[in-house]
Image (cartoon, rainbow, N blue to C red):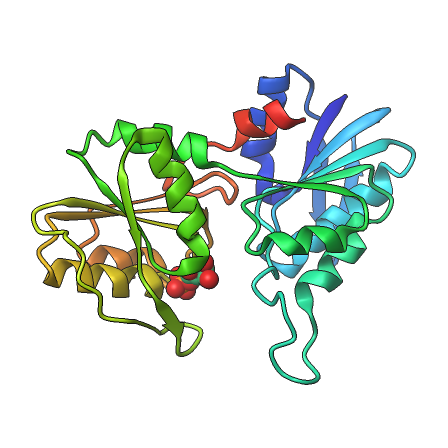
Length: 279
Ligand code: R5P
């Protein structure tokens, strides 16, 4: 078995290969003059793990090119961050159910799919192949321990992330709570007032995705008003759109971290070993 990755996920793919003690295939990516993507893989494999997060449409095209190049192989597809998953319903008549559209096309001609903390679990069923969503609760808990905080309180900014806070807190014997969020626009959210015993406490706001940072910044502002001593944000997928990192920094957040499902300077913990255990 060998690992090959899109341009987006080279570091995680290499860490995964190291964890599994298997080789990485040299994949050469170039552009045609009109901007189209060209791929040449420098090796073949009977069994291959394709690793690629989807943050942009080009990331999706790169996965499709890899699937085609390895069409004679037994393919395991790892999608560390599956973009388009937040449009997981038809909220209005005529809307595309984006998560289904992407999953259907990626699930064909592969033997199995792994995703990591996919935004909505039920999307897994759209792949129409053997698909598993893996949770990073354990590396998150290990990472939080390295922060050496005094009895931190874990808070999820909405009910959707509550299961994550619950799972992670059980691994560190920490307390957890959650907030109630309403989305007003792509960048703005409202968080219902809630009194939480945060006075003089170190808080970790835990969420699956940090996109514009609006959710975390709004939650932090409320918690600081209630007397929190320090606020740290831990996300899994660091999308970091629209200047999110600066927005969170200026909201007074002490540390901003995410995993390497999207490779960022603030990727503080890795998905590789959990992925390797499942594969
Ligand atoms: C939404 O339900 C997700 O779990 C995140 O809370 C959301 O994607 C964060 O987005 P933003 O950083 O733009 O507030």
